[in-house]
Image (cartoon, rainbow, N blue to C red; front, side, top):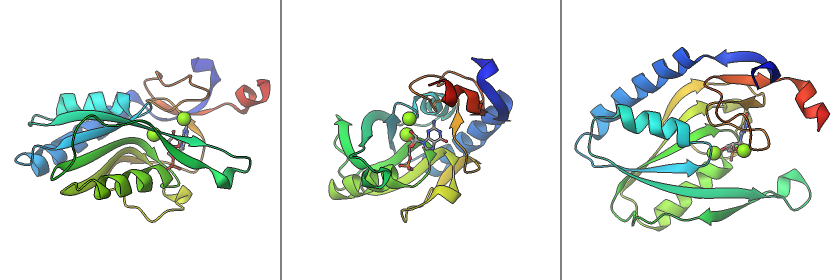
Length: 180
Ligand code: 5GP
Ligand code: MG
Ligand code: MG
């Protein structure tokens, strides 16, 4: 698995430093708000577990799965709710936890849904922010690291379902794609 990585961009230590910093900041800002943390399956699970472990405040956790279905061209990619929340978000202070925000499509979909359901406040927390990929007008309120416009794997990010369990964030070797 490690042999398939061209370059490591962020080590386990870099990731730990980023989650330490974010968890401290969120704990300070949400101490009296009893936030509902919404983790976006599947990629955000690793980040979410690290974060909730490090946040020493009262918080609840729920999961949502939103997936892209492509009807031919990439640009027709439509989002569908695969697994819904079990918690009522009305009047809740919501923290969305994402692995990465690229185009912003997933985040926009989720923010619109939570607004419609009456959330009191909505903030987005993402381990990675890829600002060059942005196509939708959404803000990442808290991010761990900024990443370049490359296809990354590790710490939750997959290629065909694999590599999510790499403890670092890296770029896949082109030979891995060419083999498929
Ligand atoms: P967005 O809706 O912001 O365009 O993209 C969100 C989703 O696209 C992420 O949750 C992730 O699944 C996928 N994605 C975006 N950039 C990357 C990347 O560099 N590597 C991988 N593996 N997935 C990515
Ligand atoms: Mg995701
Ligand atoms: Mg994926």
